[in-house]
Length: 77
Image (tube, rainbow, N blue to C red; front, side, top):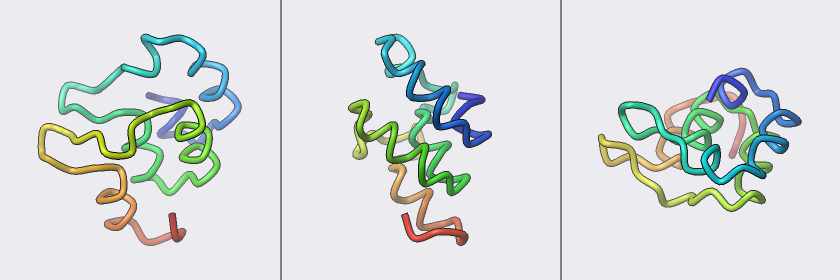
C-alpha cells in the first residue's frame, strides 16, 4: 500500500506478481488501485490495472478507484 501511496510504479509492478499483494486491502477496503488513483499516480494506476486489479472494486464506503480519481484534481485518470 505504501508503494501505491508514494507513486512507486516499479515497486508496485514487482509486488503484483504475488497474489496476496494483489488482493490486499486496508481496514476500510481500499486497494492499492484506490490509493494510487486518490494520489493521482497515473503510472501506478496503469501498472495496477495491467496486473489485473479490479477497477470496479468498492471500499467499505462504496467508492471505486474512479470515484477517488474524480475527487482528486491533478491528472485526468
